[in-house]
Image (cartoon, rainbow, N blue to C red):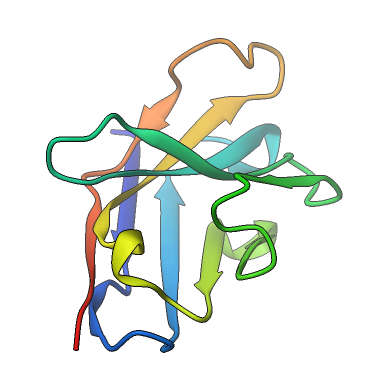
Length: 120
């Protein structure tokens, strides 16, 4: 069964850093783009970062540009989101989403999410 598991969330003070991991299994990870989304209570889900299947192209939401870095290690079937200079408004449930390169409009595969809370 296809599986995506996120980890690395937690409670961090403003200005701190976290590294989220997304481990994929039972599908051809290297043929899938990866997106990190987040959703805060009472707010719509937001696409935070995107990386293509080869890891050569990345895109970021304006709200995180310059602070977050998305990367991937295809041999390890893992993607990462490094989050620096965290702000209280970054508090949300963060989801990893893998989308096939041949059908970028599809919903793809989703994990259950990892909670990030930024608070002093």
